[in-house]
Amino acid sequence: SGYMFIGFIGFIYLMGYSAIWIGVISTIGQFVAWAWLYKFIQKEGNERGLRSLSSLVAEKAGAPEAKLAAVLSVFFLAIYAAAQLTAGGKALFVMLNWPELVGILIGFVLVVAYCYAGGIRASIWTDAAQSCVMIVGSVILCWVALGNVGGFSGMHENLESQSATLVNFLPTDISLGISLYFVAFFLGGLGVAGQPQVVSRVMTLKSDKDRKQAMIWFFVWQTPFIALMFIVGLASRVLFTDGDFDAELGLPALAMDTLPALGVGMILASIFAATMSTADSQVLACTAAITDDIKPEWREDHKTTKKVTLYVAAAATLISIAGLYIPGGDSVFTLVVLAVYGLGGIFVPLLIIRWMGYKPDSFHSIVMMISAFTGVIIWTLLGLGEDVFPSVPGVGAAFTSHIVMCLMRNDSASNPFGRFEITPDQRKKFTTFGVIALCFVGVAEGAFATYAPDSDGGGNDGKVAMYQIDGNYTYYEIGSGTEVISDSAQVSASSDSVDVSELNIVGFLIQIAHIDNEEACLVTANTEDDEVAYEGGIQEYLANNSGTQALMDSSIFWIESELIGSSDEDSPSSIDDRLSGGDVGLGEYTFTISVNVNSGGQPPICQNGDTDESVDWRISLIALDYTLTEIKS
Image (cartoon, rainbow, N blue to C red; front, side, top):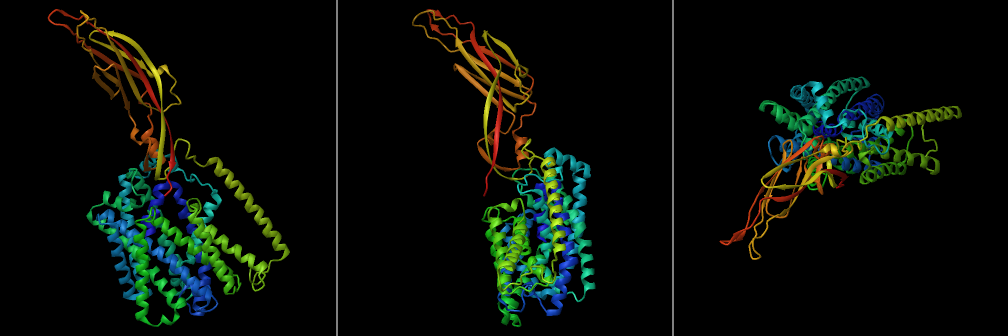
């Protein structure tokens, strides 16, 4: 989908090597779904003659829980489809310099055309054809990108020079622990079984043999594609380091920067193939949910069905357009995570208990879905999804409500495990397994706390966001003196005179004060100020000034001092680089101070006596201490 070309690339751009876990663990979750839940879905779909996921999680068509499931499906799938349109808009913005709004509207037209042209069968066949375009374009771009960054070794070295965390396989700033972080990825992969547009395809399979064959083709295609996207994401991080660069534009920007026109066209076709093939599937799944469960009387009315398809596509388009005007609303990754993990949290628990043979009534199913939906939305609104994706609270809330109703509600069967009876011996085994799991979690969390990279140590954090930058300057005198100068004199000072080992030296300050030695020849004689000039510094960082004023000074910086007291969108590691003085200020500072003597008098009677000037000078190092505060939108 557009998530792989746009959102996933952005995640890799920000996270570096540690982004590999979302690919690996989610794939494991998807394998479990194919081997387990999809078998149940395919069997139930064929036996009951179902077309939609919302019908699958209900006892009969038109039941209250089926209607609620359909409403929730439409809600999240519209968000998912909006993410695809946004991805297409971003691609056209980078590659053709068209406004994102234009790209979104073009996507809307194409999606409607796809859906009208052939329905689910055409959607499946076009998905297969477009997959070929996507994989070919990805291979070409990956090959060219590696050549531009110096191969794998050159890419690694460049990433390491940007930030040590980018080449660490452990993530940073995971406030809720590494265990939940990984569990969320697994549930996200398993949660694909909760996506209506995927389930509708599984339901079209005629036999278990077809399911196994489809599973093989799925992983044969997806596994190398994830690897290719991972490399492309890292390469884009190497080539595009501007602080205001949108991480999700990495792939199209990389294509524009490295490929000829024909190659750019191939990548643009790949992106649109990905986005449109996914968006039309989601719109059709929404249509099926509405016509099968919310308004089943529309099912055989093709004219009305087409209107529903148009309205769903229009709703997704409006969501995508609205995201352009909401901070963070145009993030493909954020939209997809909310949709995918929301759907998984709502439907996978219901599928699992039905697989176990538990037959929930309407109230039981509705409470589970509402609990999961509430958990996902509250978790997202609290901003906790940045640490742990919302599949965890969604699935957790659904199963918690299931167990509570089994224990406390008379109309719900008391055994939450359906056809599986738990004997006392099995309870002991489960308890033992739980204790072992907790020990494993404890070891994992302890190891993570010990070995995980510290983003606060040296500012090695690759997260691009808006930061408020505040700082204080401290001055350390390294030399001073008084010179009586008639023409010019040279003064110098060394940074060795102070201990700068723990200081961030970002500049120097030269201060000059002078007193005119002119002696008036008469009480009424005029005096003229002498002109003092200075020039010097260290390496190419030089200060110069001249004038007759008694006090003069100059400050020279070799950092982006204008950042202090302002806000900037960049990663902390990049801001650190821009505000780090390094060893530039270490060494000898040399200045030439010159005096242009001006003498007055009482013409034509006498001329004042003025042959020199007394000049006081001071050279100081400037040290910077600063803090970064992320500005939450």
